[in-house]
Image (tube, rainbow, N blue to C red; front, side):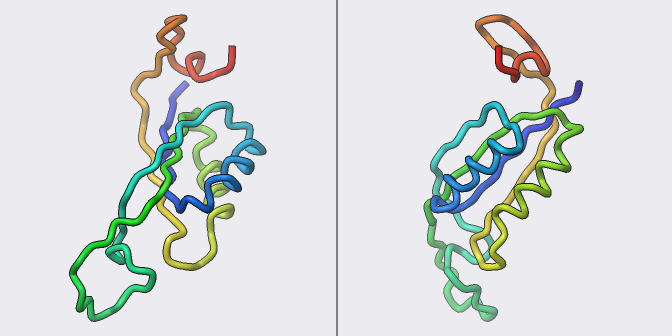
Length: 118
């Protein structure tokens, strides 16, 4: 079974509602870490078309990393887009990647078995 990795970058205030929502999607595990970053708006709250200020501000964000079967990827992406959407700058970004291999070190389980509860 093919696996995919999803990284969801969003604001700190959205992490708790997202965690609860992912529980409803039957996600069994995730890794969350704090980062600093900015997108095309250079960390400003509103994008200025003229881009007079080239200075970049790094804003606090959270990254949620999930590995799941690739066949469930499209459903998860749609689900997360709906959960995080406000229509305002800062809703976040979602990246997805193919996973070549996964291994649970303790048991040596690989692939899908490595990401499932024991």
